[in-house]
Image 1 (cartoon, rainbow, N blue to C red):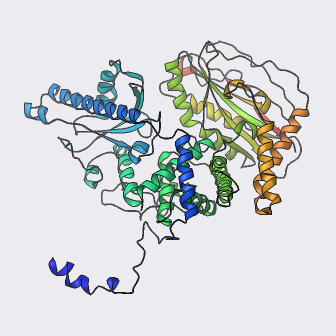
Image 2: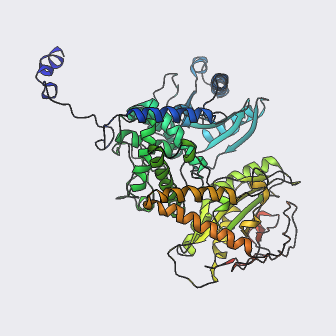
Length: 608
């Protein structure tokens, strides 16, 4: 050992005088640049950090202490739960004494980028004789349900990754469970060791993946603090620009973390302001579906399926593969659709242009986080409105509909061969003014820009809407009162409850965007005509809509009271549209739920 560290090292070519060492390689390829920050970059990073702090993205010391307290109490609860199960099943006193369960964190909390009010992603690892289906979703659920500190308890056993959601003293918790092939789980269990994957099923592997991926990410980035600041910034940006939601077909927390980590590897000496700018520069040029990977894909010996489009035909259909670094390597962004990828690429371009202005001292960081004006960006929308008998039912119903909402866009674009583009909005809106709980989701609609069409040419999407509704009503935990209504509306018909002020404020904000783009072009930045042209088109569409006189229309109110016979009211509109309300009313029995009463065609006609 002395020789290998002494004599051999002294004659190593890599340590000869006047010879540069090659830069350390992070990830699967060499860095694009090893340049460090300039004084201007350092100043911009300070300004960025201050902006994030002023925006309230960092929690207080009191909030951090409360989270730690909640996690400590949760750890004790699961330990006591496993010990009691062990005793009830007749194991020896020694086994009862040694019985244990361990809580791990992952997601934003583990990565160190959580903020005020964010949930804590947690994983409970238990012994082999404690099951997920019976013990976790029934036994532990019953214990939590009896605790006054626990509220909004919602088990989701049928999810792709089975989860139990609840609030513990006001702190939102997402709790997963994994039963590993050990009789006793040690407190110092190394979850990154591949041995934890022995003799377990696919759902358990998926439950363990979050923790294993978070640990790998922190190991694979050159500077953890720079990574955290950049990720915190870009997650905030994604939420402001409406592209943060894995379940809706955009990207979620782990996806953004992997994208940012890859940029950190490509620019290992860059500081946060540089990394944010390079992020947009890299991903506006990225040739999807080439995968983003932090390390080479590892093909382990345990036989679990890994992402490999050469062997797995399903993987070839992935549009934006972002591969997890821990075995078994998977595509974390399999939910991305053609429509959501298009929207994200537009937003990446927006971010790139703003960052260029920031580097030229023509804009401040606040410009990067201007909210995306979804309800001012389209003339036409689909509204998916859901109702339930009470708030608990609505919470469960909303979770199911939200998990399938992206399928509506996919079905529409597939049926119309991409000629009608859809943009699902990642946020649901609750109307609290009604007697019964109501929640609504929206999808923006527009014809494909390059599509040649005749004025008033209709797009028939009734089959897509019908398939979507039947998919929604296949919910295993459906209850009487859970209903869904799909209708086409114009911009002026958007309900007031989606706006913070209770009404739409279009013109001033649109004109500010137009003025900013016009100023950029007058400065000779002709390459930026894309966003400006897009905004001008939207302004023209808005003006065209305003000048057209519309007769006030009564719209059918939504109630969760069932009706045995309903004749849906037709809602007529202008601008080349033939609109019929496509509410789906189903009978009370589960056998009759698939009989559509009063379902109408939905033909959308597009005008120039």
